[in-house]
Length: 283
Ligand SMILES: Nc1ncnc2c1ncn2[C@@H]1O[C@H](COP(=O)(O)OP(=O)(O)O)[C@@H](O)[C@H]1O
Ligand SMILES: [Mg+2]
Image (cartoon, rainbow, N blue to C red; front, side):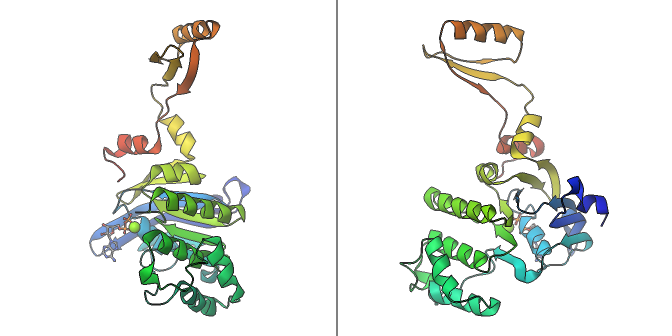
């Protein structure tokens, strides 16, 4: 790996992929992925189903080997935490016993079990078997297990997929708490609002390629072609103005008349950018 890639902006990357290709038989699923992740950030891999998100996580976590390209991860496998569909919980075991099994494998003191169960709001349900949990509770238990050994890097593969808004928000809070502790988080999602809320950087993945990368807001600005302003007046009138001198005069007028209620720029969100780049929706 080229040193410049790893030491971009003089902060050592915790993950660096360079031209990673993954083939399953004839099918090329990742077509030359390059990406660096800085310690302590939440990076989002955003793309529709089948884009290659899970494959990428599996390669970074060592569950799959890349066909070609370089993968650098500055973390041992025991310092990684994972929340992935495929790593299922034991259905017949209770929440507590699921975590106890994991604690044994990782040499985690048993006191930590109650601590994380409390953190994810499952103290009351600790004796309940997993097959009696709601989808949201399962999600929280999976997250509890992923963070139990205080990993250096946390991989979350669609952590809120199919969950209701309340549970989704709870999971977002827990993810932000982990970030506040300095944990690096690698998140996949097809929910652009989630990415905009949580991620410092996002990579838009489409058919095995990163088609855009950056800060969510910066991407919005980059694709803000029309740069229109949306305004609303106290008399109920709404209008879109171009970003020009004529609009400035109008706005000044409305301000002087104390008529201006709201004014907003109209940069596109990630969903719109994705649509523009690919012609298809994320979900
Ligand atoms: N083990 C495998 N063998 C063959 N094809 C696979 C395998 N795993 C994933 N794929 C294919 O790779 C593509 C990307 O899959 P995946 O990484 O799961 O996408 P995502 O997580 O973005 O939905 C899909 O077309 C999927 O069918
Ligand atoms: Mg997936």
